[in-house]
Each structure stands twice: as C-alpha cells, then as structure tokens.
Image (cartoon, rainbow, N blue to C red; front, side):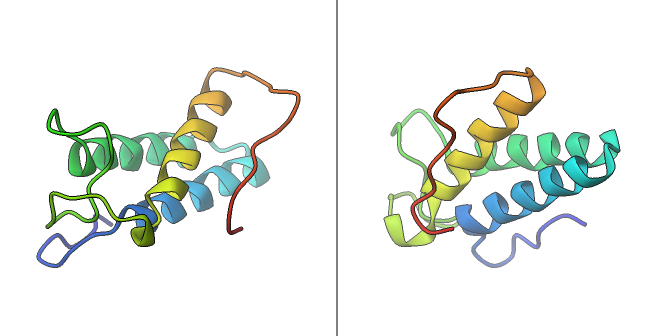
Length: 99
C-alpha cells in the first residue's frame, strides 16, 4: 500500500521499506519486489528533495533537514538499490551507521 501522507512521513521509514523489498528480492529473485523498491525510491525522491537544498527534508511535512529522521538510511538504501539494479559490485561494501 501507499503511505498515508496526512501525517508526516519520515525518510527512514521509506528507507526501511526499500531495504525490506530488496531483501525479499534477494530471497525470492521475484522482480516484483525490486520494481516496488524502485517505486518507493521514486516516491522518496519526490517527497524529500527539491531544488532548495541538496539535503533531504526532515519529513514530508517539513522543509528543513534533521539527522534524527534517518535520511542517511534512506540514502544508503537508494544507493544499494542503484548498485543492485545496475549489477555493480563494490569491494569494500556499504557501512551502515545504525544497522
């Protein structure tokens, strides 16, 4: 389902969704999970980024950046989705700050 946008949606929440969808794809090889991860990544880019700042917004209802809303996790998942979708492997791996 789509997130309810009547209330603030936080970047970390969409990052968690993308993470889980990519894990489901890893386990099943079903492309539907990867397609849905791309859907939520596109939604996150529209929801949290605009031309006013290179940093993601704190939420769907705010215009400023806050680290506490876990935008770093969202960005890591978008990067991981890009690498997975383009079959790019990196030697050092990705290092999460809280997982």
